[in-house]
Length: 112
Ligand SMILES: [Zn+2]
Picture 1 (cartoon, helix red, strand yellow):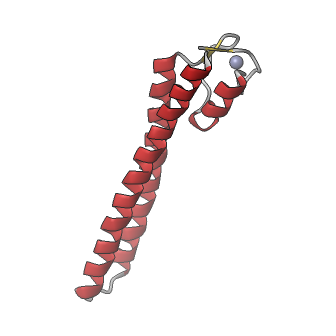
Picture 2 (cartoon, protein in one colour):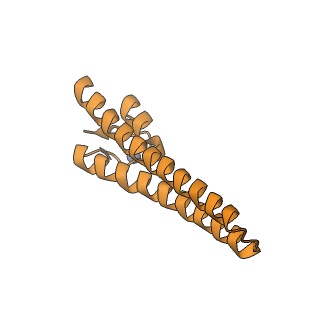
């Protein structure tokens, strides 16, 4: 893989991250509005707090899933796969694996 392609690949991985960051920003905005409304309506219930915690956990899980599936798609597009074991590096190790050109599983050469 040429330097230019590596840069393109890393830019696409970063785009996935910034998309998730934007989603986080929107989510925090919605949560703040919800907290404000709940406070204004003077609702005092442990169910409300549980609901907010559930929302937070659901968001975090969704964000992780979005990062993983998004980066997997980028890897497929660029054909990032180990020539020795045939595995694709996990989302969070992808950029590093590409830069080193080494498979994080077996140390084989990454094809691309
Ligand atoms: Zn490998």
